[in-house]
Image 1 (cartoon, helix red, strand yellow):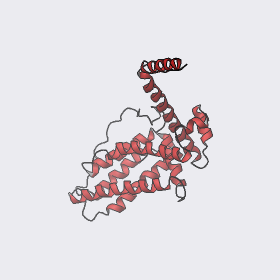
Image 2 (spheres, rainbow, N blue to C red; image 1 turned 90 degrees about the vertical axis):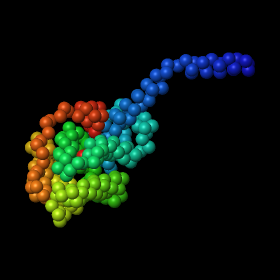
Image 3 (tube, rainbow, N blue to C red; image 1 turned 135 degrees about the vertical axis):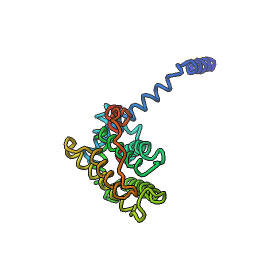
Image 4 (cartoon, rainbow, N blue to C red; image 1 turned 135 degrees about the horizontal axis):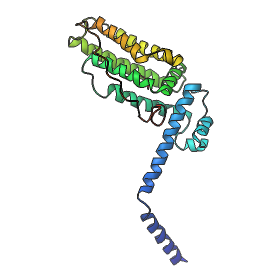
Length: 250
């Protein structure tokens, strides 16, 4: 009997060693694809119903899996929400903060490009607006996230504007914090209007017009933004509608 067990163990060991090398990677790929599908589906649910009214069971059903299968990837609804926000944040960090802007004008041009990106990610924009409204409640799971996000983006903008003043690009005495807050307010306001009536609001054009007028007012040379960049091909990143699903607004 002991000999039989030994032969069985050795046979199983050989079977494990001869298994296709790509099988483990294939399993991971399937798991990654399922996780991404859950994230993409959650974006649409949080956008439509917000966090509190969204249901893990409905999200799982729309993914074609059980709620238990969803919980294999995420610990719960709050973990899923924060994972969705982290994915959106990564897109924006790479788009807006990956390289220091060479000038205030260059930064403003990048912000306009980000607005164009957001038009190709309607699910994320709708979700962002819904969750920002909800997170005004200090008990909301995304309250701390949005508080930190606005502080970080404002701080980055103010630092960049102050650097522009220091090198003589912007007028001395420019109220950099006021300019930064006004810029964020216009960006968010245009996003809200676009979500309500997408066909009647051109986010990039509206934001470009505002930033051009702002720059002409605060720059020493009185010049605005450089000529508009040519349209780029549709976004095919994983979090875009033309990729694997809807993907973060500025």
